[in-house]
Image (cartoon, rainbow, N blue to C red; front, side):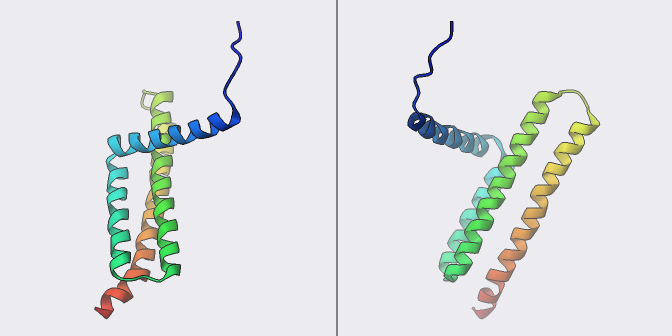
Length: 126
């Protein structure tokens, strides 16, 4: 017997936020790399406040932080999916996980360069 779906678009919309916050909690609780990135993000934001970065620099920092956390979340989700698909040693799964980790590394390097470009001149002024 088919159940009639009584959820409204509005309730599904708000439920999607609950799912997203749940995923964020899981990542914080279970993924050390995500926790490290979150702590670094807080340090960067506090540093930006203390060093009085410009509005444009704030925007760049916020976008870079958001993209960095997003990259780590996607990497984590892909790794979990790969582990679910195959628990055996599979060269293709291994390559997928390595490539996903490499994508995060590329963005981390980019974020570090952006941080240097924003913070180094301010630190040299001190």
